[in-house]
Length: 307
Image 1 (cartoon, rainbow, N blue to C red):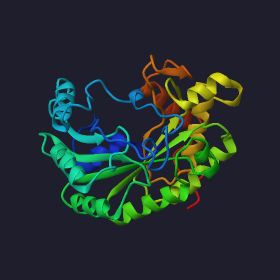
Image 2: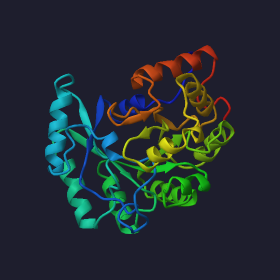
Image 3: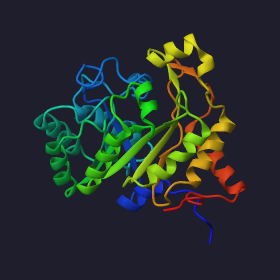
Image 4: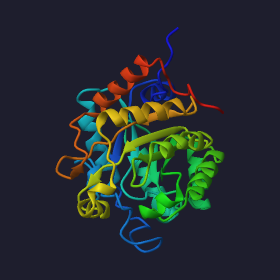
C-alpha cells in the first residue's frame, strides 16, 4: 500500500463535501485593529492586501455580487462545482455581531455556496461572535482561519503583529472547543528566522487543535514597511531560493502531526507588487517539487512527529 505523502487539502474537501469545492475570495470591506489604532498603526510589516485579492473582489460590491462573479468565473470549467465563501481581506470578525451576521448569511444565500472560511486575527474573536459561529457551524460548514505567522514572540513584535503566540494558541483552542473548524497560517523565513527555529515550530503547531495549516514563504511586497526595510538593508534578509525552501517545507512536513491538513506551501503575489524573491513558479509546480522530494527521500508527513 502506497504511503500518503501528506494530508492534502483537496482530498480533505472531497472527503468533507463529496464533490469538487472551490474557495471564492470575498472582500467585505472590513478594516483591521492593527491599522486603525485599536491594537496598533500601519498594519503588519509584510502586509499589502492587494497582493492576494482577485480581480473580482471589489469591496464596494455586495458580498453576494462578488460571489456570483466568482461562481461565473469558475463554473465555465466546472459547472457542478460547489463553493466556500472565503472572507479573506483584512480582519473578517472585526465588526458588530449584527453586521457580521448579515455579511456571512448573505454569502450563504448565494446558490452553490456550501460554507464559510473566515480569515481573521486571533485577538479578534470575542465570545459573542464565537458563540454565533458555533451555532452556525451546526447548520453549515464554517472554518475560522487565524493568522498565527510565528510561534516566536520576538518575531511577532518585529513584524508588528500586535499579539503574542499565546493569544493565537488560546484563540485556536477556544474556536475548536466551540465546534468550529480552525485553520492556521504561518510565514517561514521572517527576518531573524533560522532553520533550527523553523523546524522547532511543527511540534508546537501540532499540539494545537488545528484542522488545516497554510505555510507561506516570506515575500517582500511593495507598499509595506518590510519593503522599506529590505531596500535599506537587504543583507538582513535571508530570502529562500526554490531548492532551499523545498528542503525546509519537506523537513517541516516530516515533523507535523499526520492528521493536520496542509492547504498550501507557497504564496505567489502579483508580479507588479512583488519585490522578492522572484521564483517564476506556479503553486502547482512548487507542490510537484515537494512531492518529488518526499518520494525521493522516502519521507512523508509525520515521519519525525512525536505526539
